[in-house]
Length: 162
Image (cartoon, rainbow, N blue to C red; front, side, top):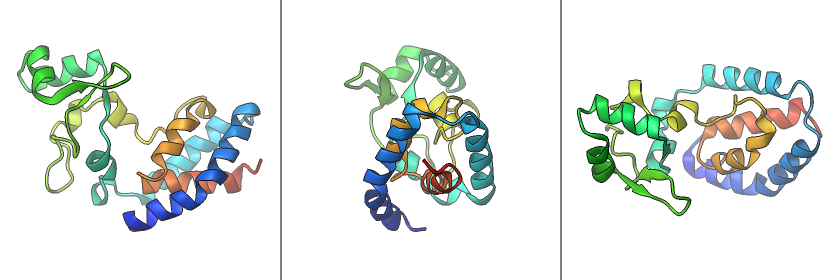
């Protein structure tokens, strides 16, 4: 799927997905986390993130204090130096990248700090999170960004009709 197609498909499905997730929040099925783990694993057997990296190109992760500590140590910088060089504080008072695409994404779509990358990057697109219904707002935002998230949500609607 091309990214231009993804945006259009996601836009077409947005209202349907929002209604679906609203119902899901009200009455999540008992096996939801199990099904989501299954769908997530199946999708990521087929999906090569290195072919896309749209998340790294279009959105910036949130950096926790632990992320800042770990990454700055890896880069041999003091945490404050790392913050000044790469981060800013957003409207929610969180540390985020000063710019996108991500500074640490190379031309081959590899992450130059992969082994110490932020928690938000490690967990993206969050489709295998416990209590999945609680993060449906994040998932709605990720569907137009991540082809895997789009596919997982479409498969989820088939597997768990509401």
